View 1 (cartoon, helix red, strand yellow):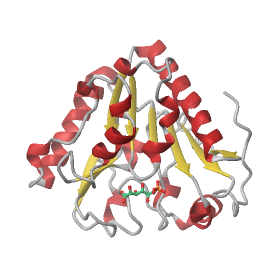
View 2 (cartoon, protein in one colour):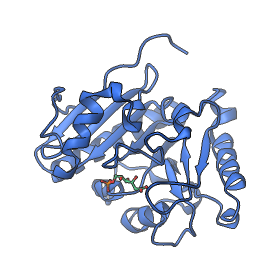
View 3 (tube, protein in one colour):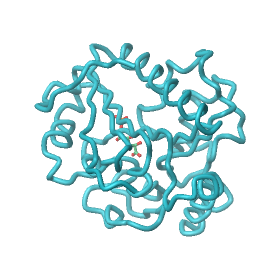
View 4 (cartoon, helix red, strand yellow):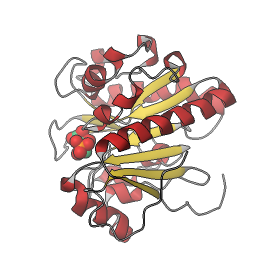
Length: 258
Ligand SMILES: O=C(O)[C@H](O)[C@@H](O)[C@H](O)[C@H](O)COP(=O)(O)O
């Protein structure tokens, strides 16, 4: 692993959420192409919240090779897969039900293990090991792309401010039983996994994000969960935001060019 310090985040601010969505789709397609050219598959982790909707630029997009995608969840609520709180349920409603992705390529939590968080998160870690371990021979999986949101408290995935999980250095997948935001039981990718990805993208839209974006990006020393996302070199962190979310930012943004 390189001793190079993490690159600073690249911030792209867009005039509207429509422009953001089409630019995000182009970005994802480019990441997909690079990954498939290199190793014949594309590994991506998705979140819930408003994120799945922001991916609608991928629907009907013929450049997307859905059969090459291996989709994991950056975090998941420990509820049945068809439950309204399930991130998988949300991603299916917003995206997967509208595109030709093989069901086997979407790696959900095991719905038979909902009553045992430890077993459930171990099983999801095994799922990751099956996908990554032998193939990449790395200590941590290297996702081609991880897509995240940020909450008003600065949380991302299910990594919440002040929680002991922020210090997890070993496991790939961890569970929490006391999420401050309901539902309380969740599993999440840990920082070592998030920070070994090739690309991590935060998506944040609307004036409701302006305050927390400034805290996360202008005051990273506060150590909010989203500020701790710092992919190791040569991994790169990007922020795709709209002008309303960027309104209070002091750090500069950059034009989006593919
Ligand atoms: O797990 C959760 O409780 C939510 O999914 C949460 O993590 C959400 O993703 C962020 O709060 C960003 O929310 P938006 O993307 O809707 O702004």
